[in-house]
Length: 156
Image 1 (cartoon, helix red, strand yellow):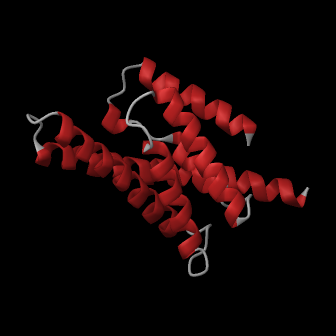
Image 2 (tube, rainbow, N blue to C red; image 1 turned 180 degrees about the horizontal axis):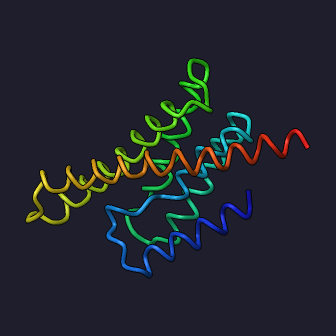
């Protein structure tokens, strides 16, 4: 898990350094929140989501509480649906990633609409929708790679 956090920090930095537009960047820490649902009990997973979100809020220095709120939302969605859905289902992972990324995007849109009055709402919605689609497609591949590694480690 520590290696995943270090790799995520590196990938987030790399995407930012390379100048990848924000609407194309995947939140790799969101993927870690989803993957760790398999490792932790519900309360431990919630605490992990809060601590990770708090740490990222401190590092980002803007929009305080953004990561805490979105990671707690994701953690809660996992726990609410875990009895009815299989964590290894690609469709479940894609929907969960899409909704979580969409909530992140909507929070950012609300922030921008309150701060900048010249931004076009329809343009932002399209970007958020595109980012959510990209996150759900690429995220499913990454999550399954991570979960497959966890299952293989359990049986060895």
